[in-house]
Amino acid sequence: MKKQLLLITIVLIAIIAAASATGAYYLTLQKNETPTITPTPAPTSTLNPTSIPTPTSTATATAAPTTRPTNSPQPTTNPTATNPPTTTATPTPTPTAAPTPTLTPSPTPTPSPSPTPTSSPSPTPTSSPSPTPRPTSSPTPTPTASPTPSPTPTASPSPTPTASPSPTPIPTPSVGYARSNPAPTATPLTIQYSWLSGTYNARVTLLETIRGTEAWTRIHAANMFNSAPTTGNEYILVKIRFEYLSGPTADTKYDVSPVFFDAISENGVTYTYTSTVPPTPDLRSSLYPGASNDGWAAYQVAITDTHPLLAFARNYDGTGGIWFKLY
Image (cartoon, rainbow, N blue to C red; front, side, top):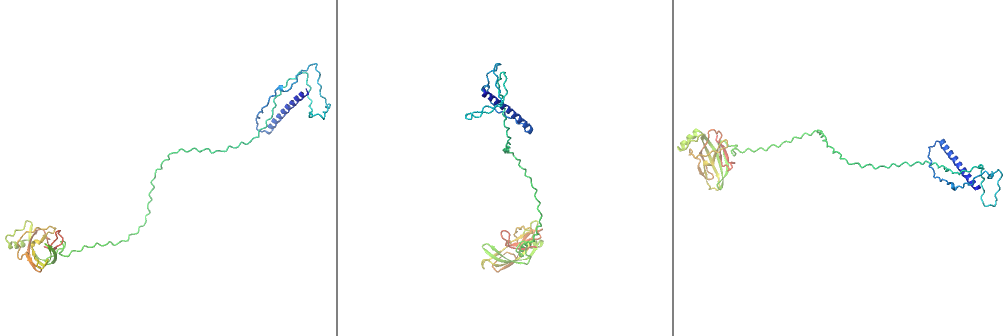
């Protein structure tokens, strides 16, 4: 019985101590004005009332009064006893005769230790992956025509004048050996020419010319059957000296004839030869090398032709030969 009372007393003391400690804790928190931390209630086990021995005996009026402990010293425990020293119990009030109610111990509020505020680690900023840029078609830059820089005028050196080569003058053909430079009367001209199968050398001189009415009179007197000049034309008589210098051989003769001479107009037209019996001496003759002959030959020319020419031994293309004036 004593043990049960002692156990109840210890429980009550623990409850009171716990309540005092809890009130002191909250007063301390209010004084320090610390942030209110809601303590997490610790799981408490509800004491089963049946686990605590409760006095079952009900006190009656006839029950013997319980002896109140006095301040008299408790009997000294036997030093030889094996039990541990008994703690002196605090005096408890004497229970009344009323039946002792069954005490349901309230859960002991155990002050949960205030959690030490720990500085939560600052979250390490993680570089969020930058979004992959969507390819955009950049506009093609329109080429702009850059202004053409104006060239800086540079003083070009004055070109050194170079003496242009003087054109080589065309040599003037000798007198009588070109149509452009015919020989006047009484000018002897030497010529080498080919005839048939040989080469000949001769000297020719125009001695005299007679033109117009006098020429026709002499021609008509030389032979009455000579024809009058054609309309628009007139006769011109020429006296020629022909000297046969050399031929293919010393014995090769050469037949001189008025047909081998041609009258040519100042415009370059060759007149057609008209067969006529000329006055004597006649130019027609047969000569051996070293021989010569002076004779007349008759030709018709245009009345309006004031500068007719006479040519001998021209080439087939009209070049070469010797040329005389018939005016």
